[in-house]
Length: 91
Image (cartoon, one colour):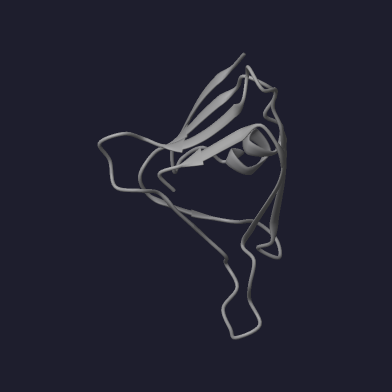
């Protein structure tokens, strides 16, 4: 089990989220986070029933914002999530 504190100065935040394992907790602090590359970000989260993966905004802080670097009518699906036994809250 690992615990991650992600801030706007965490340059590898997408890699951290993409490599979470069962029982890991990632707390994302207030601020704006811009996805790299095309902006599309796919997460496959496979926790366990007794050890879910948790991705959460920091308590008592404004919710973090995840945005796409691209602009325009065709931009969609900034964050796609699939898998089992995970929790996403306060984002």
